[in-house]
Image (cartoon, rainbow, N blue to C red; front, side, top):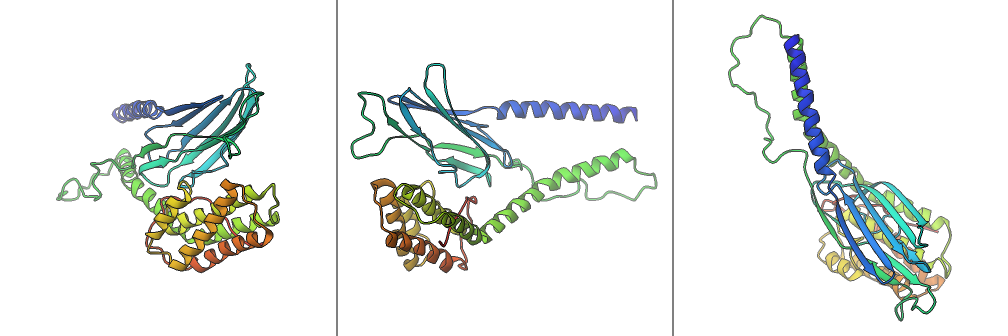
Length: 342
């Protein structure tokens, strides 16, 4: 037992050394900063080289001079590819009187490989005396953060074989001596370590399959929740159309694997036209719906009740007619979706 105790201590020492090295390596961050007039933006992401299963922390810090109003991104905007584990917004005033707004996200990538954090949009209105409040014809100034690309490593190393084979082909005749208990424990540990990555991969694939199958139910539920608050008025029209279009875009990503939330409408329509899963009638229906939403969000258009009802009906029709289609693509990550009836 003396030798066994020494061996166990040695294994623990190796484990802690490797864990410390891993923590130091994972603590590296990716940072981007930008400034426009009276507003400074700082974007921080860590770790810079996560492993599948790790939680990635994204922090957006915006500082504006006194008299400048900050409009932070909506919750989850442009982050539909990631599962949002936690979200913590805050706003305070520092000693110099400047406003400091923060948004902290804890994200979990759905798969390994190259991942992208799309640009986040920050808007501000300069209400200081003698300053231009916003660009001509616009409601506010706009700052876009830089796109961040990170590599999510797989649990399996590049040289790990995908086949389990015994070390020796011929183990020889069975011996009658009893096997020490420590050998059983070591064997169980090795089997667990070898099968763990395969079990995790099965879990991830099964989870993605369930998300794809439930895309319609999620979208329907979110739309019902949106419409419970009633039809939009002039003041709530922007927020209503932002939410309505996000429901449809997220459903498209979950259901058909089409990249959507971070693309402009024109880029998205171009990509949609290449999809073999959407009929031309559905593409035309979506085009009209998204163009109407863009007019509301970016051009200050205020449609009447009849047009609002048509937009809701178009969203419902698209969800209903595509719920039973069999998609030939696998979505990258489940985002939130929403949809339905007033």
